Amino acid sequence: MAEDFHKPTQFSGSKFESFEGGQDPAAISRVAHETAHALLARVRNDPDPEVVERLVAYTDEHGIDAVAELWSRATPRSLPGALWRIYLVRLLIRQDPEGTSFLYQRGTEVTVAIDPVIAGAAAPTGPAEIIALADQILRGIFTGDFAVALDRAAAFCRVIASGCASVADDLDATELAASGVSRASELTTRALRFSTTAQEFGSCARLWRSDSLD
Image (tube, one colour):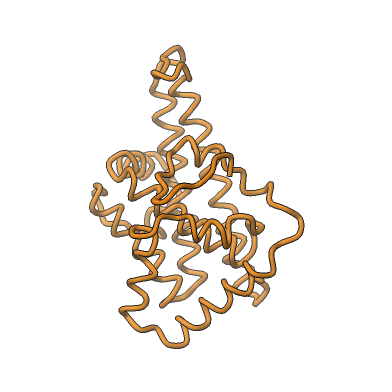
């Protein structure tokens, strides 16, 4: 991550855009893998509903610091890397449900793929529906088909990417945000980030199905 975390962390869109998942250290922390595998195995073997809900809402109370410390340096196509990105995407949704739902709804209107069906958000998709989707995907990591949850996360990211690209196309290329950065350029960058994350989720889903996600 380009910036330090603080508790509770407010992870802005600009921070997400500065996050480059592919530039992780070559040597993956043994602790990251051990904690990811131990947590997932324990919860999935005995999915107590109260425990699952506490895990889903963990970053709401504690911020994302602990999750980042454990897993943010893991490679994207790994179990800790997948868990980190799931929590990160959920946090971004909850920090701006209005903006995220707007981009998601636009994405559903312009995409020709079946990604909205795979993602599974209620339609029309407003702030409440997009928050519910984020929780459903994370909950599915612990209680459902892990690969399906990753597929849903990948589809969500592709829909958001389509929405970002579509809104960017609508904006005047000379329009500047208060920061002096073109809003269209900002949305295009965000679309690329979400597209990359979707590819990473998809790769993790395939690795999980072949028992190769470490």
